[in-house]
Image (cartoon, rainbow, N blue to C red; front, side, top):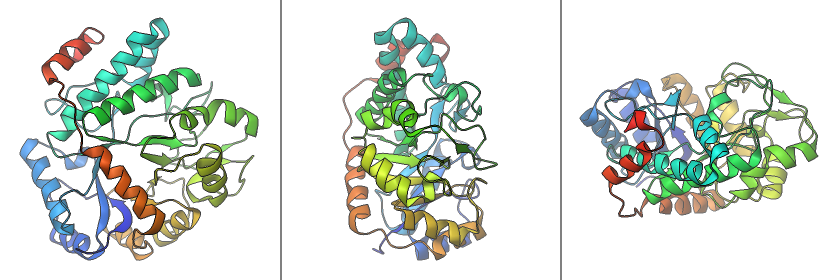
Length: 339
């Protein structure tokens, strides 16, 4: 078996092309990610995932997806119900803390049922960003709320729900995307908040949940820490804030390198991400030439990064004995539209 490279890659369509098969075999990404363009029906999803894993001869290779609920949800009916966004869970929590936390756990446990039946093993959830007034809507209703306590409690419940179903959670976007006034899909935002405000508001959910196995970075500049580089490519943010202040020692992946917030060509992006201290480079859009550029400067997964990757995979294995029909029925007492 070939050594895995420190990258997670997508693909262009609903089945692998011959070029993609050969590329994956030669470059051996550690994992894969699916988007709506890759999804049509049950057997197609299973076949695609099996083909991806077969290319790299790793039946346990993690396959990621963004399945939050609301507008960020790749599996849609009839493959999975439409679920409410995080903000709806937050509204419930504000009325009744116990009910909100229970609903967040139930919804994440349902995500685990939905994902695992297709062979998807990791969900880029919970969203731990805490938006402020006037911030870009790129987070918006995806967030559980506008104050850290709600985000902490609901984020914890969601992560535990996923792990109860044997699905790896990925908290995002560390160390916090809630103050960004620009959409990182299109441009690079700069946050000018003081360190004390960042510590109190933005970092708090990640610090409280720093025991979780995996996190995704924010393509955001924090001028109080590193005025030149976004967190994803900032050694100072990763070393002093994510690993130090926040205390996160899990597996750290970049946000998508095909987003416009990061500058430079794709080889340059990959090299900068790894040099800053990220464990994994993420590339999502499946554009072959871009993936080739990422692979050209991505090194093998080794050392502490390999240790973290092995530890993260242990969260995929164990499932509770919950009955799906019972979980769906209980969730329907909170949100009957997805019963």
